[in-house]
Image (cartoon, rainbow, N blue to C red; front, top):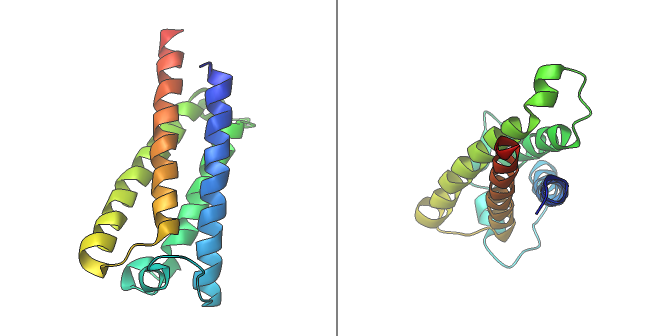
Length: 141
């Protein structure tokens, strides 16, 4: 696969993650009932669903927006333009690590699984993998 294909896959994954996070953010902020086949309401109403009063899903949405920004790469600053793939890698890696922590909380502390949270975790893992392949291509050039 070439870099353009991998970048387009990354953009698609990021949009999926963004929509997922925005949906969960909306439900958290609107205090709406979640339509899901799992324990979304339990997870979304737990004390772990917020950091300093800010919904974790909203923080995730902002992270996905940042990733999308760097993937689209319409940046005037040379540093960001030249290092956008590494920046996406760092965001993705942090996202995967934090998703592992949240999944641990779901399984062992909250005892409920939110399928929308699982979708975000899967998206982040796939995004990390595609970014690793992009970095490999960049270093081979």
